[in-house]
Amino acid sequence: MEDVLTEVPPPSRFYQDELNNFAPPLPPTPSPFLLFSNPNPNLPLCPSLLIIALSSPSLYIFHHVSSKRLIGGLILPETQFSGNSIEPSLRNKSCNIYSLSDDEEKSVILISVQCPVAAERSHIVAKLLIGGEIVPQRVVVLDSVQSPNFRGKLPPDEAFAFKLETSSERKGLCDGFKGLEYFPTGSVVDGLGAALLGRCQMRNIKGSLCVTWPEFGCDVVSLVKSLLLDNVLPGLDLSTLHNGGGGDGDEFSGFSQIKDRSYDSDLYT
Image 1 (cartoon, rainbow, N blue to C red):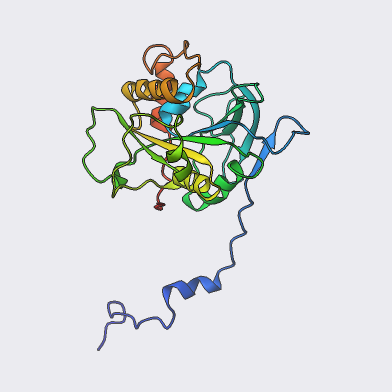
Image 2 (image 1 turned 60 degrees about the horizontal axis):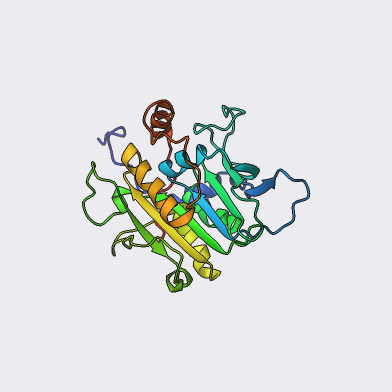
């Protein structure tokens, strides 16, 4: 006599994907949007340079730039803002838009992305930040190398950087990260950083993506600081920066431990 408890059940007549047809569909996630502090902003903003900080070292560096002025932010409905402090903090889950220069001819806008952006939301966010209400002449994206996407061995005790550029950026004679090697062939950049560079390429905007390794540490903070001062913002005042050591180093250490990159999983080339 067959044992009904241990007998292998017959195959289902439904495919696994079809079982979801009986569940009510999830409500669509609201679209992200930009919110400016000026109720009547003169849009679109047309900065000569747009800097988008994604990596922990770049976020830490720009957090200590006292001359920046908050002008707006990116609102991601899926991001919970509970627990954020009123004062700017590296621990806040936020995406703030700052002005680094009031010179209309050489205006500089900084976007500090301190909240995780899901891979499937990267392209819609990239469209918001580049080419919609913000139309920059040049874009610099600061991101980190993800070890699973790198073809080769990454030394844990050595800081270095690579670059990727749009076609129009490569043709430029004065701009770009001079002397920096290109990202090795076979390696992959994914998530929001790749979507932003792809957006620049589609709109024929001069764009550079600088990726650094390791993701945290005093050495990589010093490296990013040097790259910014030599290639992007020579006059940037970083006198209050401690390079992740002493005083604010505790803040950087805590920020390094809570930085969440779990959403960036799907690959973008």
